[in-house]
Image (cartoon, rainbow, N blue to C red; front, side, top):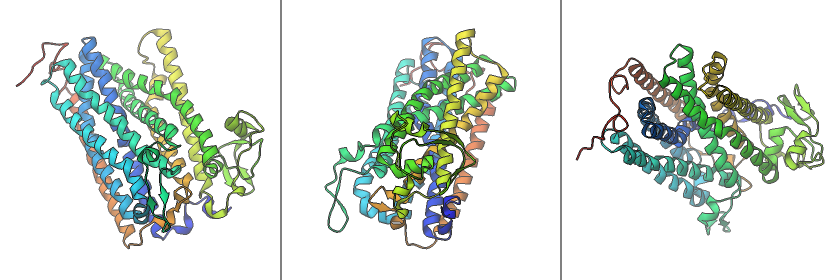
Length: 467
């Protein structure tokens, strides 16, 4: 295996292709966390708000208020980073958009509608505190939840289409004609990629928010608001985790059947055949996997529930159609699965403690585990996208167009990349500072805090409605 199998895209390091790939990877990694907040935070807010209304719970109502205001900040930042990411398709990959834009753009156009609708209802929900009766206000937030799911569905459907393109024909000049929108959106990869991403979003948001309150509790803030702030998002994440493992297991088998080159890179399989060994960790080479923990026959069994299951190896795939950096793909896949398994154990730990003690867990070791779960969930998310995107290479549209054919011929790509780095660093810093200031004000009992401000409507009092 050449050196590029270990060093990412080393042969392209001075080209537009490398610069465009790196810029796309960086902006996606930054934006995807914010996108998860847009998908899953509305449901978390609505759960807290529902508890506040149903049980006359002042602390739950305060959490819903705080989280909705924090979401306004992250949503605004996500709007900027998402816009940049959208423009990058045309600026960095113009030949792709020119040839396949008629098909690829369908799902992205739908996502834009969901995004604007979510922004509108987020504004209504935040403005509605103190201005709408309790349950009417709660229902005004439901469209946020629906639009978050719809937006995620649309974007991931577009990515699914890149992995398993269908719903179009090519004319003699190689351009897309006769686009069938339904088949484009509901391609063969959509049924497993979409739930995989949506569940990942709920895991990232649940564990991330819970980790913030776990850190606060480790610092001595053991009040009921912190306990609720821990248990509400953590419960949502722990429900999503076992479902995610089931969906991920199904997705891996589908990838093995429909994208054999990607699966071979994920598992470092060189030769086609049965009785394939599962390798945990290690470095992929043409002579086998080095420094790994081998489990004989397990890979074949996981693919087809039999050690005799035949799995395609890289040696059966033409050299120019094999994914690059197989070690990176393999380790990213292992990290995703490993973190997901660890989070599953955390979910079981929570279930055991709640069942045994019938109260919100507050032990230091448990809180320490929760405090790092948010970072772990984000790492698993990034690893999954590395597997999906790098594993599809060298194709930008699997089987139809290579990434090298899609990249721009323009000069100045490295300059654009540096500008993007600076812009995102500034935006990220500002967002963190604003969120920290909000948190500090809430902690000190400032404006918007439950300590000195009554809840906006029932259960504390009669709803205040303004004409």
